[in-house]
Length: 124
Image (tube, rainbow, N blue to C red; front, side, top):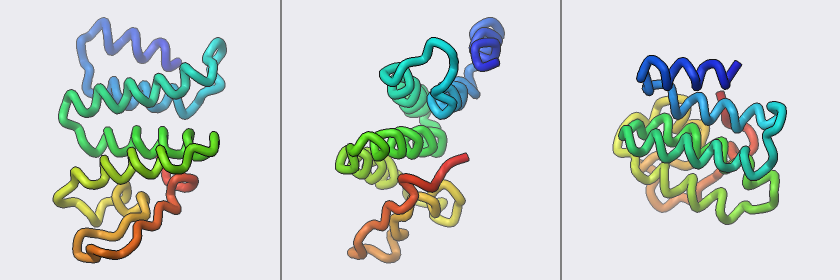
């Protein structure tokens, strides 16, 4: 089904959902023929596409997915670093679900220690 969606995006040149498609593909990870390195690549592609389009919320969602993936692999430091870097780009919208789910305090709570509990629990 995701392959069909990707083909449709390419055919119609409607790329607004392209980052989400890659993110979903990585989240599903069990698609036939998809290996672990492909899962991570899907998340990186989703992040790059979202950033190129300046769709910071979609980039955050893809980063959250990649962070969960890395945490499952024992790469907590990398997971926290990429999540914190993306979260730090926000200047507003701290009451949105995606930002709340990151587990970091809002800028109003500056100086508090981040609580990245969502590396395992946040998602779609």
